[in-house]
Amino acid sequence: MANPAEYKPSLISWNLTRMCNLRCPHCYMEGGRKAENELTTEECLGLIDEMKALGTEMLILTGGEPLLRKDIYDIARYASNRGIWVVMGTNGVLVTDKVVEKMIECGVQGVAISIDSLEPAKHNHFRGGPDAWEYSVRALEICRANGLQVLVQTTVMDMNYAEIPQMLAFAREKGAWSFNLYFLVQTGRGQQMNDLSPERTEAMLSNLVDWQDQYRPMLVRSKCAPQFKQIAYERGAGGLESGGCMAGTQYCRIAPQGDVTPCPYMTVVAGNVRDQSFDEIWRTSSVLHELRDLKLLKGRCGRCEFKELCGGCRCRAYAAYGDYLQEDPACRYQPTGRPLPIDVVRWSPEAQARLERIPLAFIREKVRRGLDTYARRQGIDLITPNVMKEALAGEERSEMFGKMPGLSKPD
Image 1 (cartoon, rainbow, N blue to C red):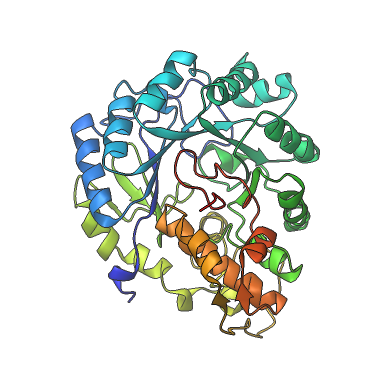
Image 2 (cartoon, rainbow, N blue to C red; image 1 turned 180 degrees about the vertical axis):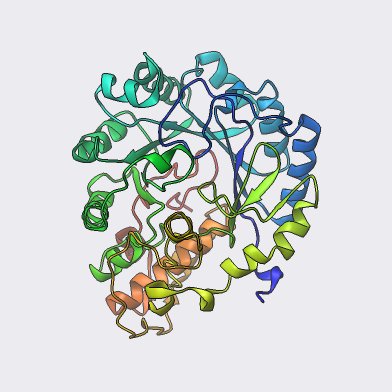
């Protein structure tokens, strides 16, 4: 059994409500009407105290549509005041100048806005709202005009596969901090949608390896496709600090009625915060302990030399096989059985100082591991600031973490 002290819920995605003003066909929450007996404000604030005690560093407040909760600003403010980095995920419909002012006042550091096509009619039809595209773009522009960082979220599907390069250019032009490309997991309403084939998934991930350099300083990230790391490694490219399945190890989801799951896209329940403390769930859940033991992975994932770097998407395995330890069906890679190099890599004092300026410990550790892996792949034995610039997409962006010190901020 894994040692509980080795794992912290550094990043939590919190579905505060099932209420939503749109009806997206891929919604894992099946958003719409409010769920019965959603967590109260008092319960939410108490839960934040538990998160802080366990070492949570970043909290994503989402839904449904989180802005439909009347206490959303109280929850965001309380988490921010406890020293937790708060990001809000929204469809953008309710975002106005006044809303953004409130977000900033209560400590929200960034806003994730969903845009699924550059064709308004296509986006509106998919999202189930007549003016959804206009609202999303307006929200993006309002946030940037007020100095709030924006992450553009897109789910790649047949309908927008060919649009992704144009969407990247659009996001960078609008000043997005990051473009997050999600790969569909067939759960919730998404069970009725067709997933991309493994071949098309791999082709898109290969493109992302190139685009992360092409669209600097905007970050380009793959989500729910941790094999991105294997592809980047094989090509000797950077971006190895990105990706890797964190479900149950550094990441979990809390649902509107208090269920804790390893990830938003997995319905397996580790416990409920109304029945047990969050601390007890995180430390003792058999589901989470299994996900932390890489020796339990099955199929190609269990044999893969990249399993510590990647791990496969546990949610996609569960959606496909009903077993979250099975191999990831979206990955085409055939393990070789040859272990990755484990040569000792040194860090120059200047590079170490830059690394230490990343304010969130779990991101700092992902960057360190990614750079160590990149250096070994390239036969580099000393990491310097120049190596960091070469290997990290977005490294040169001084406002990488908004108002907090950035990775490339001068001494």
